[in-house]
Image 1 (cartoon, rainbow, N blue to C red):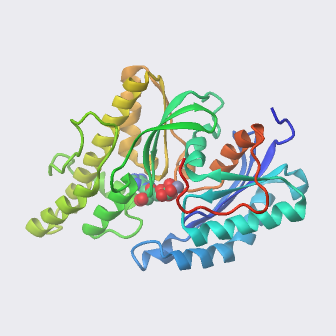
Image 2 (cartoon, rainbow, N blue to C red; image 1 turned 30 degrees about the vertical axis):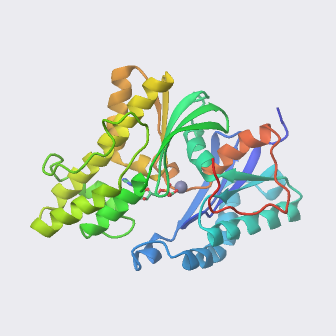
Length: 334
Ligand code: KG4
Ligand code: ZN
């Protein structure tokens, strides 16, 4: 065990959040600063990569300074600098990586490069001493939908993934069809609270098949056809029925994966783990089955640097550091 790495300054710029955090021993968040660009990208209905990169460049220094200040530390207290280097938007990743390299070099600190999915899974460790591998993780974000067996810290086997859209993408695309703004997931979740989830029978793909893979691309077509027939007058019912369809599939496949892997501990993470219906259904499922459930607090579901600090801590314990020639990888396998 590498006892010398204790306090980590972490950075995250893989998509449209510029974030910096100070994390102690992989579990304790001393500070977490997140500057979201969502307002800007909303004008275009989705993330514009070029704008994302430019905004990261502007936000990185103030966000980093705030993280140190709020954490009550200086660079002298930091043992390593951590950063996401893939997967994500190439330009966006490069801004954070270049900043992290410069910082590590100038301050003479080791550099740890973290995989974005490892970071999302590690978000479940934050503020939670009780979670240790092995466990099963459902990772549901805007870019990924994965069922993963976490054998050890940072050691994963993918059991199932999406064959087309990610769960968050399904939320965002269908939200747009019913006239909600970007990012649609959270708005759709809010609107669904007032609707009837049984009003429309939207498709639940691959439910009966013997696979842990997902498919969500049919949902967008189904909701488009429904809107063509009836318009958007029953938006709350549309939102509630859509959310129910997505959550049904996620819960069903997760349950199957828990049985197949004979696990009794489940971690649910990624932006879609902020969904109120998914959180409630997973809680009910785990209570019924006697499984332990870990879901990050809301700020650590969507992209943030604290989760990068958690993953980096365990990576540093394994002695996995990067040198300054390291690159960013937009599509980095787990
Ligand atoms: O993890 P994340 O911040 O970025 C990626 O790594 O992709 O996830 C963002 C995704 C978006 O698709 C967003 O719509 C979705 O998470 N999301 C939600 C909710 N909050 C965020 N989806 C459903 N319900 C929510 N409450
Ligand atoms: Zn993410």
